[in-house]
Length: 98
Image (cartoon, rainbow, N blue to C red; front, side):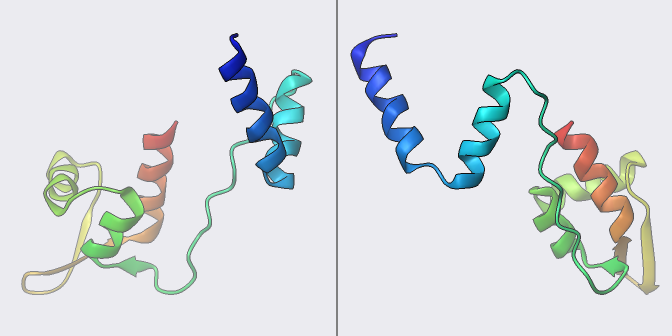
């Protein structure tokens, strides 16, 4: 490492949050650290397509592609009014991360 890289690392260490410092220390010790737990929203078990896009970080077009590919199953409430199961969306999000 060169001097600039060393200075960047030192600056990052001193400006890091206590949680980030603790995680870094575990990595340096060679310990595996679990991924942060995904916060599960409380509320309805069926969510809108827009909310699903937010949770997955994708566009509506990509979301519909996932529905048509069979990765997600839509629930039709009324004619042309669809929702997705929250558990299905979260499961897909976890597969996407891993």
